[in-house]
Image (cartoon, rainbow, N blue to C red; front, side, top):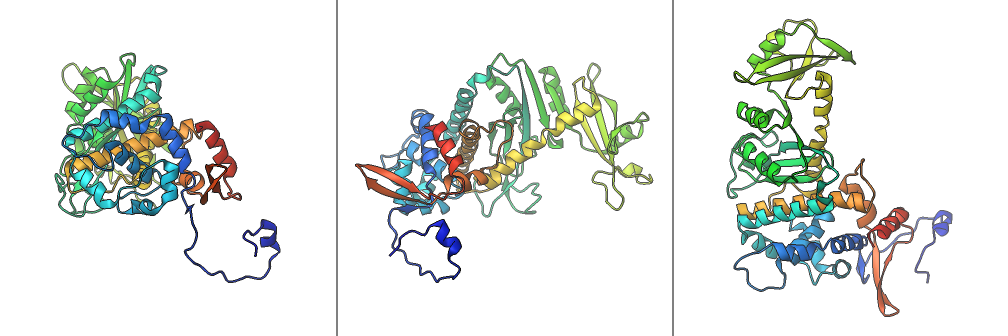
Length: 445
């Protein structure tokens, strides 16, 4: 009886045959590409660094150390399982555990107890660990003379009464309690550089100034030019004063309030830059010595469409426009201010990657400290994958979403056999992305 079916036989065999299923296969796994992750983790000594830097007081001796627990969670996140309950698939996959070099995989209850036992200080240690890896991978940012900080926030709805959740702005689940984390990314490299979990009742700009101070304090001293991009949630007079006094270049969206509309109505010298877009600017006097430029961009609304940000004071106009106002202290022309700010749109994609690729919108513990630690582990996984894309897949400028990488490089059918006094993982020889996998394996080995 033939055990294998050649591709030629599949083409020539015109008759469809019934196939009977039975659970009798041995040493099989669907995570045949896990070896790439293991080699990448080992190259950067992930587990050793976690054991060295993360100290959990009062934790008794058990099967899984803090390093083993966090590395296991990282494997689960890398392979697309965003909750501890989903990760239980690894507990019975001995081949995966063998490939990953794990002594076992913790069940959901073990992970839950681990998270609930943590203190907020552990989340801070995880954040420091993430930053240290970032500095190590980027070589201390020695090649950077300037850096762009993209600030944003994200609402995480919850289904319960977890510690420190609150009721506030929630566009997707109105009336539901939530967390409202603050995040900061590096525009040039897409790296996550810092953030923390806040109550959902907090405004976007809550503690934003101390947060920026903490980020700037961590940056290498040779970086003299710092730029900040942020949406309208971060616009405030205190924020503008702080950035100006700190000599930080900023590009912040201004809410289209009545006083802003009145200023826009006074603009007479609109200048077209093509595609129905016009630019102008006005000055905003912050105090007796500080004046801020406001770059204004308006774009004609297509016939039959409704404007997104039509000025209420100009509703009688025959031509409708979408308006955007950007506060800045740069010397760029209004159109260049607009173009530079628009690059911040990538920040929205970083958060989408965190949501759909890593489970940033999932809450897994009742404890605030546990959820904070989980948040930091997710963002650590985000950065590690960002490094993986560059180091292993040579994706520096254009970077792929993690889901595509999983399907091609990690989720490969394989069978583990013992032959010639060594373990061999036999991957599917007809795997469509075999060449790409072998190139990645060569780079990480």
